[in-house]
Length: 110
Length: 113
Image 1 (cartoon, one colour):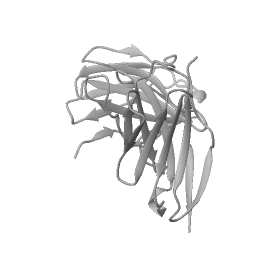
Image 2 (cartoon, rainbow over the protein chains, first blue to last red):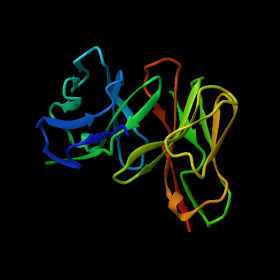
Image 3 (cartoon, rainbow over the protein chains, first blue to last red):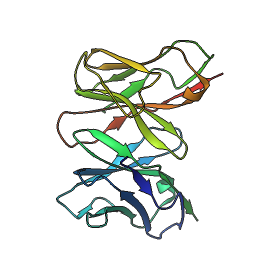
């Protein structure tokens, strides 16, 4: 079946460095991709999204890149802060029905 | 401030019990969803609803049912709880249309003994 997956289950990043979280997807029909952040004990929160007709989108300290040729999605976090420590999920889909990846745990070290 | 509220943060039930998980959203969203979250498996869709009294199966509906009698409320029902239904359950809502973020509740952690 279709799947969304992450390359690394845990990412350790030094405070102040940039983080890159990767995600592979397999459903070429998906036209909408989202990154969520989930802090311990909380529900996932929206970070940034991108439509399939785009290849890059920037937010505040975050950038999402979409490479449809290789079905790859990435989230870049600039100047990683302790508050960025969380599990990050990618999701792909359309018309509200999404498939989520397993998640990447980001640990920010001082 | 938009909100999705799940009535119970933590529940402990016994095998065979009937379990109700309630979810209410205050954003007048048409679409509501129930996911379960397990380590290493991410979020998996159980059921979703596009409108009142309407429901559709997600990827793992077996052992679950849902009810949507009012637009703001979406309930997940475990008719006869089993130990393999021990999990974190997340409710979400979003507005109509092809795109748009999901707004999640804080989750309900269910333990079935």
